[in-house]
Amino acid sequence: MNSSYLWLGLGFLGQGIFSARFLVQWIASEREKRSIIPVAFWY
Image (cartoon, rainbow, N blue to C red; front, side, top):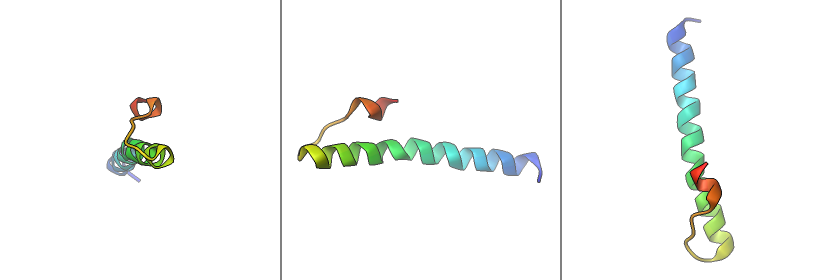
């Protein structure tokens, strides 16, 4: 395994974590029955 695979994996992991914030926002909005942006969205 060379370093390019490590960076590729790290990039996919970072993108997945970044994208998960929108899942958090969607779930919170569904629970409140209105569009909200929870504090967890920013962290």
